[in-house]
Image 1 (cartoon, rainbow, N blue to C red):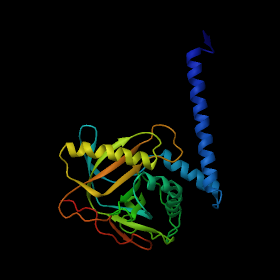
Image 2: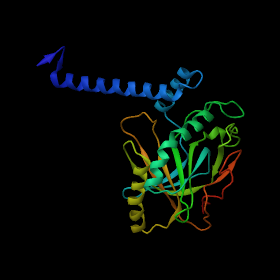
Image 3: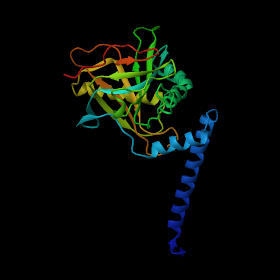
Image 4: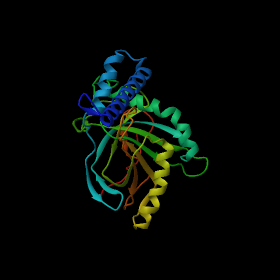
Length: 264
């Protein structure tokens, strides 16, 4: 049977697609309203934020080598804007507690790119949103959790300084990481489980790994429902490695830490 030139199956598919699109838009609007209702010019900020995630985002530069089921990436030096949080531990309990503050950290960085910097400069959104985890040594030691936005390359030489005291500029030297990509709307617990499954694969393949630092990376807006891209990064161990996640400038905790990894 055809109706207006379409089969019933085609009509069902069209109805489903339009319903899905409608629900996604409603979710986006609800999210944006809840997060920006306290901001001035909230409608404009919302539209700019939505637009940035539907454009092609700038990402850090790297060379890629394919392995069976994962990648090995050599990243060039890069500049990030960051904020940090100290956790009691980096296991499932610590990650669960972190969910309460992760969104707060995200919007501190978002305010920076919207002009909360000494140049009052608006900066385009980039990808990924990276989270660096430096596990504490011992059962009662604090774990350093740092969330970062990659800075566009045109700002790498002289990025504007943040105006919020706990936001800072972070410079990462060249580094090599092993990358596992997976989909879904991943929680911090999901990232942690993926990393735990990934490490034995890398060890089986004979790679030397650092166990004092690792990364989670997300490439999508918080309100994207489908085809999401998430990554865990395990850092390749080389000579001269030292604990810490890069060098910082400006104000805020974590502004002066040791180099992550010098590329050989």
